[in-house]
Amino acid sequence: MPNLIDLYAFVVAFFIGVVIRRYFIFTSGERKTNLPFIKSFNFLTGSNNIIFTNGKVLAVNAEDRHNEMGDTFGCYFGQNMQVFCRDPELVYKVCVTDFQKHRNRYYVNSLSPYMKASLLEARDNEWQTSRRAVGSVLKASKLKMDNVDTDIDATIRKMLASIDNRIKMMRSKNEATVFDVYQINKNFFMQSILKIVYATEDLVDFDNEFNEVTEQLHKFINVNYEGVARMCFLIPILTDVVRPILGFFDHGKFLGQLTAKLERILTKTLSGENKTDSKRLTTIHSLINSYRKGELSRDQLMGNAVFLMVAGFATSVDTMSAFMWELAQNQDIQDRLRSDLLQYGDESAFLGQCINETLRLYPGAMTNRDLSEDIHHNDFRLVKGLCFNVSIYSIHRHPKYWGKDAHLWKPDRFDPKLVEKHHSAQFIPFGVGPRNCVGYHVARLELSKFAVQFLLKYKLENCEFTQSKLEFVALGALPFALPIQGPVNLKLTPLTGAS
Image (cartoon, rainbow, N blue to C red):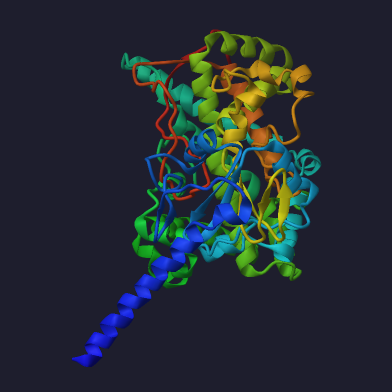
């Protein structure tokens, strides 16, 4: 009996000690940094009203906190100190001026061993080797030399032919030509990525609205971030315990299905079964060459193959879906853009303005940096080791930089004369500095070419199923992303004389 009492006393004392220690941690942020910190917290998961809460995506919660607390504020994810910043000056300092000091993203013990080795999470030399291998084949000059635009055009033609056939069938049945453009975009960008990056065309059929590989990737990105995954994110030490049983949860199941397909593609390519034009080095072949030279490990090879598909798919689908929805709401701008496209094609300056305005309101994700030393800025101090989160969504909607109507979609904000006055970190949908999005040039090329051919063929209009506002997926599998909630239903009307 005395032993049980001693054990009970020890357990009680241990938990009291944990509570006291966490209370000290969660209340020390303001003293260490002189920044406002979220006062409300949970002893297990950290600050309240910021992540996995309120039915809102992280970036939107951060925007609400910025409006209450200012341009820079602090909080805790588990025991990890976080700072969120919407000050372009400080963002530029951390991500550009002092990049070599703070070049790593904040460490997350990822549930996926592949993602740990990818460009998203790699650190120091491992990041440099991956960036060199992937970046060399995705730079603008290489894309032009490889005639990547030809591949994109071919994919667009197949997709448009499929839409035309579906419209004919709908009209023969006297049905309204209403489409889920979100689903159209999912299939298009999946096929485009598979062709450009992996040199394969076998996994997407445009005549089949739902394709297995597309749906598996979409489910992985948009699946509810289950309790076990949330706890691993907030308490990284749990990740190694959970990883072996990850396949029992949706988060791991869909990722496993996707990586299995990519592993088969990779194995065939390594064995020489997937042939490519010897004059053209696709991304996967570039990565394989680096792997064979010993520059990349097998995990880095596979990790970047997975990352390129996830990153290239999700952000492009969301951007194009939001773009189409905004055009349907703004018929005058749609008509103006179509006139410009007839004259200039994908060289249209106004097309660039429309895409930029869409990226401003609907940026694909947040980004962050792991601070390797203290930073003194204005009257506060950012301490070494904290996670510096760049609130891209908040910067892009700040009335200080975009006016009182910052929440409205107005492409003329990107008139060249106005852009000259922008701060270098005022518009950063692809990040800023050397660690920006490696697929920036591919994304812009896909979006531009797709928009030209689609808008010269169809008019986009609202229908009875069109939502009045685009919403984000609140608890998607990628907490720092801003995935749009589908479907996005619009009426497509073929234009007279369009071929």
